[in-house]
Length: 251
Image 1 (cartoon, helix red, strand yellow):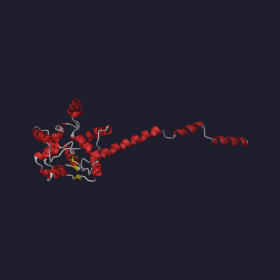
Image 2 (cartoon, rainbow, N blue to C red; image 1 turned 45 degrees about the vertical axis):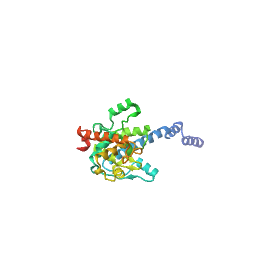
Image 3 (cartoon, rainbow, N blue to C red; image 1 turned 135 degrees about the vertical axis):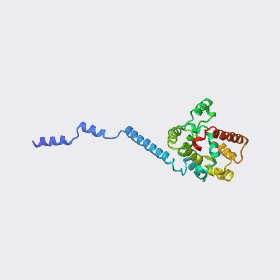
């Protein structure tokens, strides 16, 4: 009798096959673990970007990834923030005329310009000021697909949350105008020795003309090609003011 009880006790203490299977199932499968953390990473990234978009709608970006990279490369940068109201209106119109004449008429992507870019191949650009603002404020330089994908997600979000004036204000404060020279405040003093509120139409057009290749062009010592481009921008700035394409940031 005691022997039988001992045998029964030993059986009770030994795990059954179903118990072993249940215990094995409690382990986390590597693929499921990876999916879980990947999902968490994506949600965390989206939350960070959402906060960044909402925050920069009212707060001025202290710096950008590209400015940080250039500071590390050069050992210095010239970057000073200036409020929208302290920038000559002709400067704002000039960059719109030069980079995105239909700025007031799109939601971040100029579909007509994109179609023209496809028709003309790589010889024609289609990046809007909104896209450039997103790229220069939040992302890194280059043409990689991950950066393009993030730009495609963030651009409509910025257009939805920011005003057109805010987009231009941030753009004019983070864009590069010369090697290590970022923003219209630093550029105006660097090239002409004056603040951006005192820029003449010709000076504004020349500053806009150095974009998007500021390292290869000079607003202070313009080449013949840059002078011609500046003259075209000067006419374009006057045109968008007359035909109402500047209304979204001047009214």
